[in-house]
Image (cartoon, rainbow, N blue to C red; front, side, top):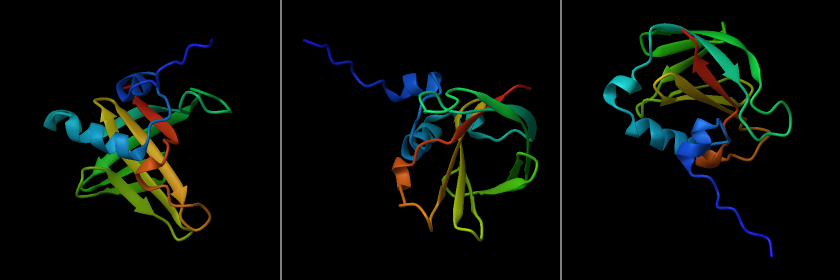
Length: 136
């Protein structure tokens, strides 16, 4: 008889850069200390796909130079998100795409995206699209 494996807990999935959900990421952000919640002024990040996806699992996609100015953060050179009341960074574009950046560890952000016109709204169950891991 095959032994069933327990599903990994959130902390293990985060450590391994697995497919966490937006709801779990927001909960994790709220548990960070006040100091850890702060966005650094500038930094260089490695953008990686999450582990366990069909294509390019845990693969480095390239660099991102993030810069926080006031209540907004610029990332991937031309993308911008603004700080929401819950401490996450969000924006939408005219094509129906919604973007959310959530700090999940001192030097790591999780990025979520979906198209509200073409996709079913997954809300808090939306899976992470990629991770930003701070290099310096």
